[in-house]
Image 1 (cartoon, one colour):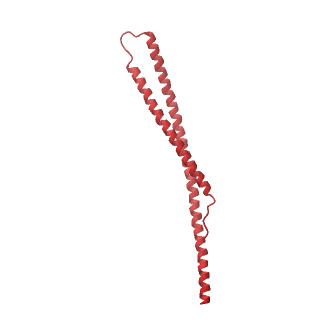
Image 2: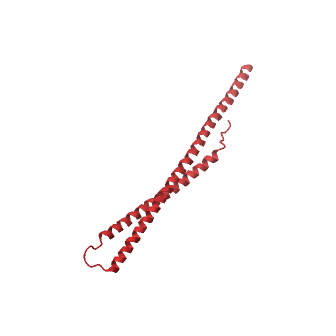
Length: 144
């Protein structure tokens, strides 16, 4: 009996490698998003702490106010930067998910084609085997 060989098998293997690479990339993006969210939370807490600790009464030196304002501005800038970074990462995540879906669809289509070809191969093999059995039975009936 002949062995089934699917000529697009290397394509399936390439698609599997692509899927794994995309999954790794997606995991790294998700990790970066989590780290960014944690950093953003810390920055927001620091900004809130700074605002709540601002003396409302009493003497405040001008130099101290300038330092506090600069620090507040720096934290606000970092928050803005982190929000932009998180948006960029979310876009990258969406792109990777779309890419993963495309690769998966391609792979599934090729696998369905493989299944159809395998069924055709099996039918052809069954036909050949039946022809051999019929031929053998005919010879035996002629001899006997």
